[in-house]
Length: 182
Image (cartoon, rainbow, N blue to C red):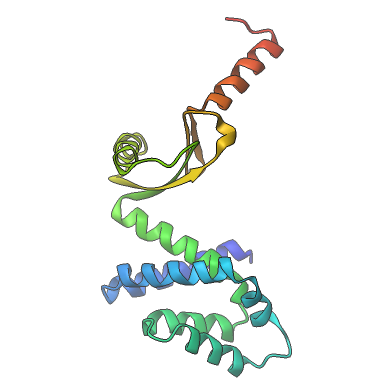
């Protein structure tokens, strides 16, 4: 069974549990923090996958490191350790967040620009593009990318809206190269 399918099943189970306990927001917040730890601390996965480290020691480190987190999240992490599925934790978190966002009518968008966008600009982008994709709101993450030269490029899931100058130049170049001068 692929890791994507397995991580999605754990995410679905955690989502249902969070929904029953009315803890979806709390679980999402805790999982985002855990995802950040996984992303910034590459040694964590090496430690958890190491065959010479006992399961009890791994559980102790997780319990200590994430003390104060809900029992639902800690129990899920312990279950994944028991089943030697620590490598799917980041994927499970991503699937869970997507599921929560879908339930709330929210999508996450990465907006690439040459400068930091103001809160008003982020709000306008959120309002315009949320309607285009049939969501209530967008959570906008602004990424500075000087290579786009100007304008913005927006990535929502697997969709890309490219209004950047570099994107327009590439499209012009493709037209010229293909000989399609309409």
